[in-house]
Image 1 (tube, one colour):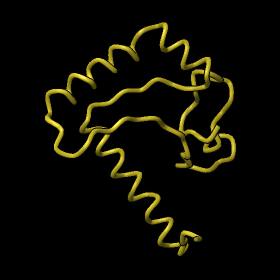
Image 2: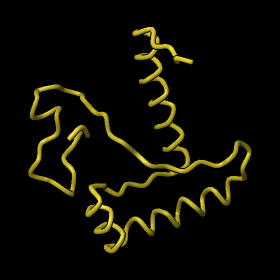
Image 3: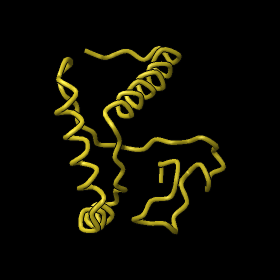
Image 4: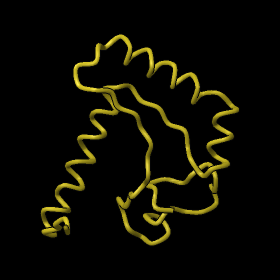
Length: 103
């Protein structure tokens, strides 16, 4: 597992950070949704609230675990902060390793 923590799909399988003694290792995949800049706050808040309700249901949780996924939801602000951290994290790796796009 490349996630930072154990997953509900395979709780007996330790993540690489634990099993390989690689503290802080976290290369998890995630799924999110975004809206165009300037979208009014009200529809974003409603969509986030509805997604949180959906992800809290036993049926959806079980389906996601069967696919190897753990359901987590966030507010638009939390998702924005997460995306910023991911951009900074991978941006620093790209810059430090001088990674370039091949044409």
